[in-house]
Length: 109
Image: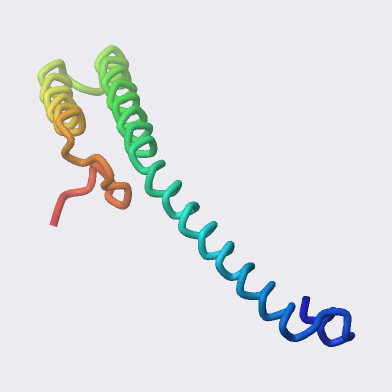
């Protein structure tokens, strides 16, 4: 548009009118996009919860394999599975959902 105005193909008043209209449309579009981002947050949290639950089940299965290989005692496995079950219960209860920056195996400060 600036080029058309400079070349004399748009009058200043038409340029101002179009510029104002485009600015309003851009602002409206930006607001709608922000709304979509906010609306997608619960879905992202749900997917994150599903992924964390899956990883806990994988860890539990791997612990059983480690016991079968003789690298861990049954008691040690049960203690670790109890810890994983507590972690899973915390995720399912809502604790930890959205804490994407924290590694669940890392001690909390």
